[in-house]
Every structure is written in structure tokens, then in C-alpha cells.
Image 1 (tube, helix red, strand yellow):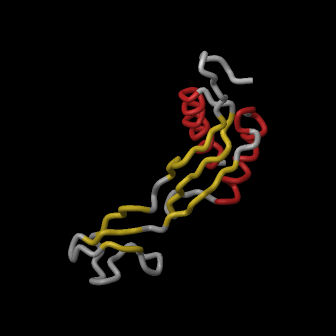
Image 2: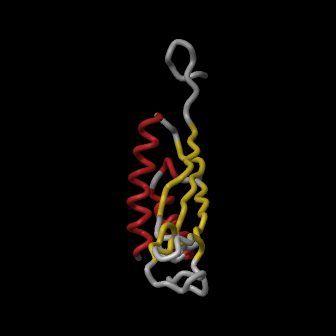
Image 3: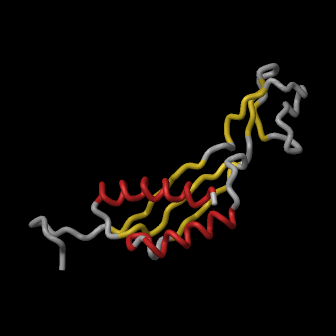
Length: 126
């Protein structure tokens, strides 16, 4: 399952954030997933549930997924916008010399953490 390996890499990124801030757990995080990222939403959810069971600091985390459409830029006329009819060609001039500018990403965006309270003496608050 491709989605499992993607989420394993994501867990590595999240673990770095947890360590950096001394967090107890991840409360929620948001992913941006491009339409061309080759991700099946149902398999992404299954992979998340599987990893969530194995990682204590992710046990109650909520994964929010924002799917992003494909946006292209035409080299001939300069138009930039969403692709039309799932064809990578300019909807204005029908040119094929286009660049995908958005829609291939798999990006970790917002992360909400539970961080222990620290009192003025530097220890954990009661």
C-alpha cells in the first residue's frame, strides 16, 4: 500500500515536531493532497488508522485532509487556472505547452500539539 509508506514518512516529520516542542501528543494535523499525488483517500485513512494504533503520541490525533485541484500555467498565452476536463492543456488557447503549478503535492500543513504546562521554576505545572 503506497499510502502506508507516505504516512510512515509523515510520521517521521510529525515526530520531529513533537520532539522539537516537547509535546505530549499530536491533537490534529492537516494534509494537503494534490489531485495528481496518486493517493487513494480510503487507503490513506486506513493507513492512518493502522499507524495511529502503534504510536502513543498519535493515538487520539485527527487527520484533516484537504484535496487540491490541478492548476496549470500555459507557456503560450500565460493563462493560469484549473485544468479543464482532466486534460493537461490550456483551456484558453488549447496549447499543450503547460506546466503543472499545483496538484502534485502531499504536504503537511498545520499541526496542533498538546504541550505540557511549565511553571515559572521550569518544572511541569501541577
